[in-house]
Image (tube, rainbow over all chains, first blue to last red):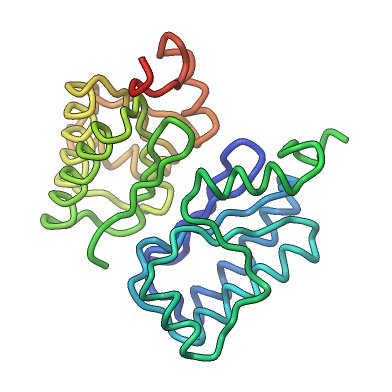
Amino acid sequence: MEHIPILRVGNFLLVTVQVELHDQLAMRLQDDLTQAIVQHGARGVLIDISALQLVDSFTGRMLANISLMSRVLDAETIVVGMQPAVAITLVELGMEMREIRTALNVDKGIAILQSLLPGGLEGRNGG
Amino acid sequence: MEHIPILRVGNFLLVTVQVELHDQLAMRLQDDLTQAIVQHGARGVLIDISALQLVDSFTGRMLANISLMSRVLDAETIVVGMQPAVAITLVELGMEMREIRTALNVDKGIAILQSLLPGGLEGRNGG
């Protein structure tokens, strides 16, 4: 696999991470996602990690970085679908992930985005 | 990777296929997806294959099967994000994919589902 697809669903972006984020893949995702935020005027990003059974500190840092980069571009990121074992591992690794908002699943993530963003999820292109 | 995650987005299901569908993975996807349709009362399924640069006849057949199975369960399937090279390959393989509805991207797929399904995308659990 060369890249992780970024789906535009309404006015937000959805990324499902299904494989371990090794260096090159993570860099590509950062590039693609920041570009997609600007291109589509997205205000919200959902990153689904339900397929990840384990994470290492690199993956945790990548998720935090992507979240911070999105915020600089005025888009909120919600990480959804985290497995219990992943939460345990992250804290044991000393990563409190304060930079990251989480939600149980995509639906709850969308609800949070809608409550966070004044005017809901309308893109910025129009206004 | 052990399985392809199935995301519930509103009242439809979204699957992004990012790796080649080998036997076991495809079988698991069939199982998981049909179960998720019943469990959530989903009326629509979107399968994003934008990450697939190539498909073989097995993958094509799997996509067709999944589409037919969903239909038996009264859910419409739309395959979205097909790369041009994949369309060429499928036809060259003699697979016309008549069983499969396609759309350019997730947004257009959602629009098709909404127009196809009377009452839109409300789940069946309530009614």
